[in-house]
Image (cartoon, rainbow, N blue to C red; front, side, top):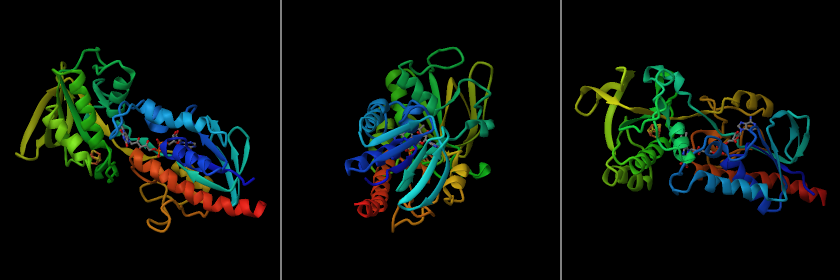
Length: 349
Ligand SMILES: Cc1cc2nc3c(=O)[nH]c(=O)nc-3n(C[C@H](O)[C@H](O)[C@H](O)COP(=O)(O)OP(=O)(O)OC[C@H]3O[C@@H](n4cnc5c(N)ncnc54)[C@H](O)[C@@H]3O)c2cc1C
Ligand code: SF4
């Protein structure tokens, strides 16, 4: 039988690649560094996903169970690839637990790292406990605990969501747009309004990028059906008067300074390159994009190729991506990997 395809990373992209390869009768070995598959939506405890409205634990949890139930898929959890050598059709990988895997092709589906808001200290994260991130609010919603101020457990009456935290920010070297955080923030704002009808929710933005079909269900519905208020502003700092958080900045439509009190401030954090990318680049000998994501060899010829033949890439490892695009890229990478693995099969027969 042909050698397996090695998939590094078991998030939505890696899971979809594994599922597609198994459906084509191809053996797969997944190497996931955490003790659980599912990637960011499971590991970070996301709540209801956009655009489906399905709970992450059901939607992505379903992908995990399907892959874990596949006879052709072997999963290695809590390990990483330490050494990697060879050529298309004949790669050899050594894992951190000493296991060795011979693989026909490899897919890097190693995803992203959430921006750490500590790197934006003027916006209060790490100083004031009621300044939180979108991932923390996702966890409050998905755990059933409800949205509460971490400082004293009270339900907030006024929440500010600050967009583009760790994205589109030249001061901290992150010029990219993280694509999904406007839509995720509108979704979170609606969920807060639904669970706490007396809570006023404000979204502070530079531009709103609820792209494509998300405009109706998120941008307009959040305002018209859920009374979420949008303020175009440049935020200077988040401080406290001892009782409430104070958001200071400039309303850029009327060009006037604003100083507004809130109970909770939410950072809509962006998608940084995976902190492991330098190591992955060295081990797999693949080039990185100048922002630190894994570079794609070509945009149109084969969207999954890296600088190394036989090593493919999919999902947020390549840059900020949505879940559905990561899944599509996982399937595309599976097809590309299969084209390398199949000649090996034919040669073996
Ligand atoms: C707050 C927030 C909310 C979001 N909500 C949505 C939403 O509702 N809908 C939507 O479409 N998108 C959403 N996204 C985007 C979504 O998280 C990504 O599209 C998706 O997680 C990308 O999947 P992936 O498999 O490429 O990467 P990941 O989900 O990051 O998975 C990568 C996997 O690889 C593993 N890994 C990493 N490095 C290594 C290594 N060196 N060795 C082995 N394994 C490794 C990781 O542990 C992880 O399991 C959101 C993003 C944020 C920041
Ligand atoms: S999607 Fe919206 S919040 Fe996210 S970086 Fe782009 S503009 Fe900013």
